Image (cartoon, rainbow, N blue to C red; front, side, top):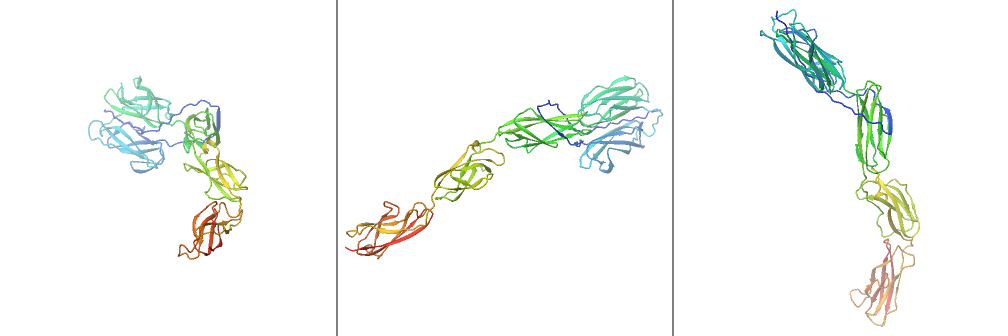
Length: 513
């Protein structure tokens, strides 16, 4: 009787590769708790195989097909049909072969998880014609030990042929995708073969082989190996792994694919930094503002599992920060005035005053902002001294040098007033005489000047009023006059001080020749 024959294979989807490295024990060590059983979601993969109950596939007969899924986020669907299975589902498939010899047919299944991720796996089988029957068909079994290895673990594969007509031959052997090592399939007995393989990524891997008996019958068998991801630890830096010296960096570690809560250790052999641990995070900060590069090692471990990682942190040197200490421009400051002194950077960087003092002055505000008020207690030139730094980075102004600014403080003065006086009458018409605004000592603010002169009698005639010759002779409150005709001439003088105060005084010049 003819032998029933079956051929099928399944190809796994892509998988996630995770590796670790060993870090030597450093002199600075901080141990904190990690996130228990925290793990990343493995890549979605699937495998399609015939049920173990199927000896051969016969045309038009219902055949159970098993779909296995790993990774992604369940529940899953297949071929866009809503499903509700978490990792495995059995389908009923019917294959048709109207010929008289076996025919290889394939079915492809698309698996989609709840996140919209999808993958495909294909099943190829040898379909016997409907009229072909056999009481002892050719069959084979494929085994793997272990069936759930870790990435990098050696797996022993075995194939056994039964039924049909001995002797048997094996061909088209495939250990599965993503192997880092795979030996050839070696025949041990007339009906058994062995091989070994190591897989470099996690997920479902399908090992398969085709067996042919002496009568020419062909069958295929396969084995799905579910490779578990290796334990790993990941570390991230906030705000970045490269910052300006003086800026702190927060490191956060996450342990993945551990069976129990691991212990997480941070360490470094580099100097010039401090560690502050909180939970599974640490804050790394330089002890000064100098540039440096450090490597932080992170180890997550339990009694049976361990993973390690490292991260390089770069603290760049602070750029030169040029700053100035200034106060509002004014022509006149006097004793008792409150003057605001401010620090500013040419780059526009926000600053904070860290110290300030004034010669014979009282600082009225606390430091920490970019400006303070100072009241001076005596007259003369006064110097203010201050230091400042950038608010965000802590960079020192002018590399830490003291900033200075000098202001002149005038004495307090009384109200501005004046009296007008003239020199004796000239002996002849047109001769000059002097008019002066006399300002009492201490009156006014700063220097007092003559700013307006008004004279009269008949201003329509150039020879019937007092005419000014020039002002600011000898002192800023005097002016020369000339008179050409007899009469009485009023003279009005206006003075102004540096604060803008004005005063007016007048006199009369009587001339007779």
